[in-house]
Each structure stands twice: as structure tokens, then as C-alpha cells.
Image (tube, rainbow over all chains, first blue to last red; front, side, top):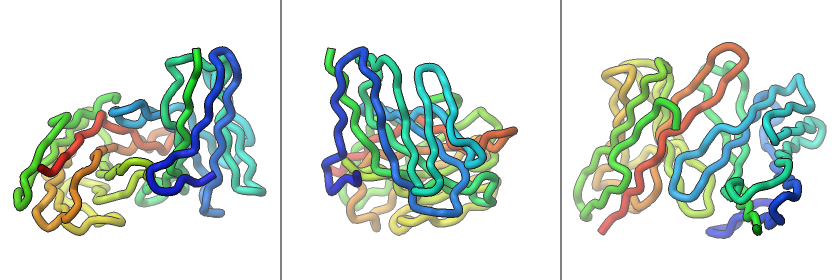
Length: 114
Length: 114
């Protein structure tokens, strides 16, 4: 869901469980999507990307799923670890667009319990 | 953080002062961006530059200024006209190489108005 004011949506999981973080994107014309991880006090870190000609893309312990019909993106983290605790947010744009400007979601805070 | 550096990490400003935040990249990227991040908020675009000696206003440019005299450098000045400058500032550069069109971020500068 969308955050309001200072409060981000929070997902709390047990260490070793799988995590699923969701994102609804806004622009029907967007065809390129990125997931970032941001630890407290640090800059966002690129995790994985996907283009709209794909429904699924896998990385190391992460999978991104794209549902263009409902404009929904999800990030799955397998065997979640304490080091995965961070804010995760998605970004969208038009691949190869002249400006390259990204539209960012507000993010979801992932908290991993040991 | 890749090859993007920001300095200083923490910056304190008195009311009425202008301050300049540094951003340097050695990734040979043409496009660079400045964002502002407030607690619980998504990233908001301040200014961006597609090429040396050219830059455009983003969504919240008022009270800010930039220059792009070198490909590697994109400094941001927060002027006294910015009424609420306390925030976390992030610089990014665009990687639009083969099969990728994403932005990589620096570590950020936290600006506090005293």
C-alpha cells in the first residue's frame, strides 16, 4: 500500500522465510522497472531490473515479477537474512527515454527478525 | 555506491547561508541527477543534466541551483531561498548501456539547518 506522511508500510519476517514486497506503478507507458534497496543513512543500491517484455527475472536470491495488466511489480527475496533489513522501493521509466527520469515509489520497510 | 561520491556526508547550515554539495562520478556517464529525500517520502527530483553545460529543472528546483562544467561533476547549491532545506540529498548518474537504463546513487549528504 501507499505510505502516508512519515510512516512507510512495514513487512516483518522471520530470518530464513521468504519475503514478498509489492509495488503498484503509475504510468501505463512505463516499460522498464527497477528495485532498489536502501539501508538507513545510505544511498539506494540497485538490486534488479526488468523490462516489460518479461514477466519474471531472477537474480541471486531475488526474483522480480511483473504484471502489466494490473500495473503491479513484486520483489521476492528467498531465505531472508538480517542483512536484508532495509527500505525497498521500485522505480519505473520508459526504457531509453531522452531524459531517463525515474518515477519512484515511497518504499516498504523490511524488518527481519533473527 | 559504485563510482559516485558525495561530500560532505553531513552538512550544517545556518539560516541565510548558501551551501554547496559535491557530487563526482568516474563512471563516464553523461546524465546526472539530484534528488531530495524526506522521511517516509519517495525521492523527488531537483535538477538533472543530460550533458556537460546543460541542465534542466526537476519537480522541486526552487531554492536550488546547479552547474555542469565537467562530465564528472554536478554540484548542487542550496540557497537561502530554499525555506525547508533539511533533508537527505542524493546524487545519481545514468547507466544507459546495453540492455540497461538505470541510475546509480551516491552515498548521500544529510543537510541540517541550525
